[in-house]
Length: 303
Image (cartoon, rainbow, N blue to C red):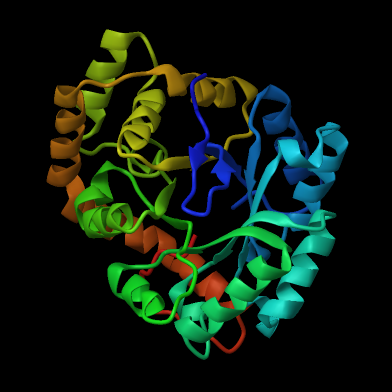
């Protein structure tokens, strides 16, 4: 279960695998699932204002019996219901039942109103006040990051983005820019080629590699994501599946195996990206509705 912590550019440590609460909804279900994840070894919980289940995540963390410092908590400013940043972080802290979060992200550059620089300055203020330990962004492209850097006093510690082999070539400029500037990449939807996009060019090599190593294809995808230097964010209601995800930290892929996965991802990229965008349009509309006063371009990844 080798998912070592990674040092961020501000000196703080972040676990390299996290349990995400996107799509879990509200009520008993997300509380139970977060509790389960913590009970088997996850120590990083990723939620967001827009997910509307921060309170459930907070309940699970308290009920786990773990000390606050033993759980890394990420949440995001999503502009939900037109709430400003000051009110949003106060709401999030109250919902989670904590006096600080470990990582606070701008959920999407289009939420950064009136501008990325103004919003980032407010984020820097939150870090200075001690209510957030580290600050970062989500779904920022290279252009968005360049805009931020024009006035930033503090670098983003993290950029959380969509990342799996079918979008690797598309996202490579972001990965390269992040590496150049010491920004850690977090990957969401890393298992999409298996969970929502099956039947593509990746199916065969993932099966061949997993059979050779006597592990599951999903573990190979997580090992690939780790090999790209990214933190993995994943989720499941199944305990055995979560245990496999943790075990994937021990899997080492050869350069040849990584290249095989890269090449298969590139072959399927065009067709698969169109399919994925179509499925995600509804979610783009949902977050657009939650963030009153803001509008989003169709097809932009926001989670």
